[in-house]
Amino acid sequence: MSSQPSSITPHAYRVTGRNLGLDLARVTEAAAIASARWTGRGDKNAADAAAVAAMRTAFDTVAISGTVTIGEGEMDEAPMLYIGEKVGHGGPEMDIAVDPLEGTNLCARSLPNAITVVALAQKGCFLHAPDIYMQKLAVGPGLPDGVIEIDASIGQNLANLARAKHCDVSDLTLCALERERHNELVAKAREAGARVRLISDGDVAAVIATCLPNSGVDIYAGSGGAPEGVLAAAAIRCLNGQMQGRLLFENEAQITRTHSMIRADLDPTQALTLADMAAGPVFFCATGVTSGDLLKGVEYPNPHYIRTHSVMMRSESGTIRYMDAYHHFDPHLA
Image (cartoon, rainbow, N blue to C red; front, side):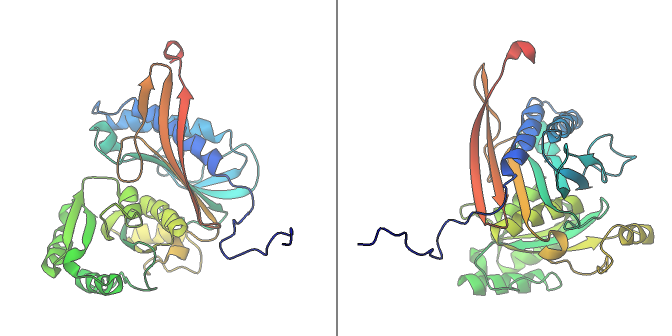
């Protein structure tokens, strides 16, 4: 028998360029640990402020020259991690999308699915839009291209999805934010025969749930924040799901503002593909603050350690890593 290594098979491990996932995990871990102190205390602003401060400090250790394209708001609206802020201590130019605490209400009320989130892409690859609303539609991997269409009715999308999954519409569960603006969407989905899961907050985790085999979510639909839409798109890219979006404008001033921010080849009112929202190689990282479908929350196993649970995803290799970390903690130095 030959001692020579066999040729590489299609299932061989793929070694690609440097993986920044661990660097990003340190950023989301820091934000999760800081905000978790406010879990259940009813002060969402304090929880968010703690996450922002910790995340910004942690970015100083990351070897990139990053620009926040999705952040905590415009420069005059947020003191830290605002759109256009520079982060990192030097390296390749990168776009950064952050949500220091996705689900501030969830954290404040000690409800499931509060997470801290960072996504990273090459410069110019994230949709650069103001903090407005976005219509979103997402499903998981392994489905025919074009199985969902943002301009189609929810009934038609459910019918197409059921056909692709070889099941009945009654076997499908749609997830949406519980908002008055979604009353018609919910009614039409139920009329079509689908189940509906309503959530109070946290639509990044909810969109990702469409790609998790045991989440019980088949499709996500409805409107929410555009920044959260871009973050969710980055994760969906890594998970090989499908997602479409459309920016929703309240006035002409918002359209004009968006025109000045997005790529010249994009019409602000057009339906957005995954590539429009998050193009090129993408990294996505999240750490749980409160336990949910995606991740366990921050835990305190003993007085000297804090335990965090994170996920790191990379679109280039398709790798998904879960990390369970113990952080030494001296309560006298807190």
